[in-house]
Every structure is written in C-alpha cells, then in structure tokens.
Length: 186
Image (cartoon, rainbow, N blue to C red; front, side):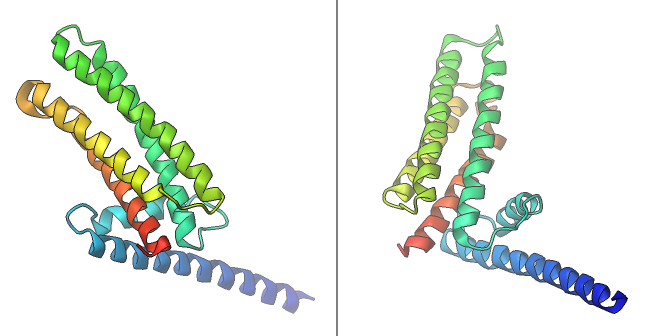
C-alpha cells in the first residue's frame, strides 16, 4: 500500500513537471514565432514574461495558442482599465490647457471603445469565430497609437504621460493579433 502511494505521488509530480515544461516550451515557441513575424513591434522577452507570469497562476495551464490569445485579451483589458484610471487622474490636473484635456478625453473614449471591442473579440473566440478578429485587433492597436501620438504632441515636454502604458498595451494587442493570424494561417 505504501509503495503504491509513493508511485502515485511520483506520477503526479512527473505529470505536473511535464505540463509546466510543456507550457514553457509552448510559450517560448509561440513567442519566438511572434517576434520573428513582427520584430519591430514584438519583443520575445516581453511576450515570454507576460505569458509566463499569467500562466503561472492558471490551473490547468494553457495548452494551445487559443488559450494564450484569451490570456492576452484579459491582460489587454486590464491594461486598458489601468490606462483609463491614469487618464482620470491626469484630467484633474488644473494646470493643463484645454487641448491637453480634450486629448485626454479623446484617449479615454478610445480606450473605452477598445475594452468594448476586446469583449466582443473574447466572445467571438469562445465560439471559435475568428472572422475579423485580426482586423479589430489592428484597429485597437491603431487607436492606442493615435492617442499616444496626440498626447505627445499636446503634452508638456512632447512626451505622452501614457507612453509606458501605451507600449505595454500595444505589444499585448499586437502579440494577440499575430497569434490569431497564426491560428487562422493568415
């Protein structure tokens, strides 16, 4: 009886280790492919770090590219929520001119729309409907780029106060887009 229990425990530990290494291999393989397909936008290290951090909290771990896309959608929505919080705080600054305030309002609207589209994309992906997903992701990325450029043009010092968040959001969206293109073979 004691011998059987030990074999069972060894099997469970082996299975867990296999799944963990398999997940890391899957992340590495797909992040390599994504950074190879679009090296000007996607960095391998960022892709791996985001997915490994998110996947470490999931049980069971992701087993395919569709799972990673779902994770990236969630991370993007969380990032957009963070951006909206920062915009709200920045908007309260009494020293801003009306053009900076208007640009912040425009950015707020764009990020809110992005959250809406990310919800639509998540629903489509759950149904395994990939039509237009890549196009919508491209539009979301473009909206965040426009926001960042407009804020840079209107902000003191010529640097958007959302530059860091924009870089994170843009990469998350673009990695997701590349993964969708791999899935749909486009």
